[in-house]
Image (cartoon, one colour):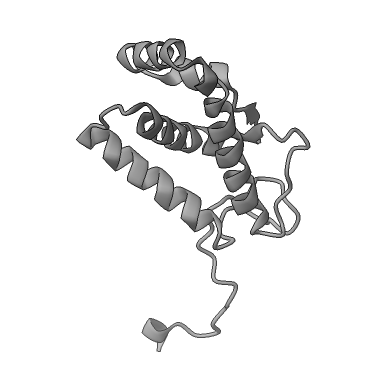
Length: 142
């Protein structure tokens, strides 16, 4: 599992050119808000890391800024949404769909169903559809 540091540079680079320009203009207009994006990033990364911990078989990278690669894009989408709320940017309908999917992904992590490959107790790829129950005779054999 590759762990990726979620940083301001990474997040701002993921913005569209127009969104990045709006963000940079907001920072120029409100220099006291420059650290706000770092707070949003730290809060969301910790939310994802807490979701990973919901499954005791998972492990976390010791670097508190890192998430598994499979979580990074969802985290970036949610950071973009929260930042758009801060700067007063309009969120497009297509972006709302991505935000909804990212929220669902994050909330489902808290059910414990999210596995990090290689975690203790993980026997196969995630998701696994093996029930663990073997029946001696199948109903159709009968």
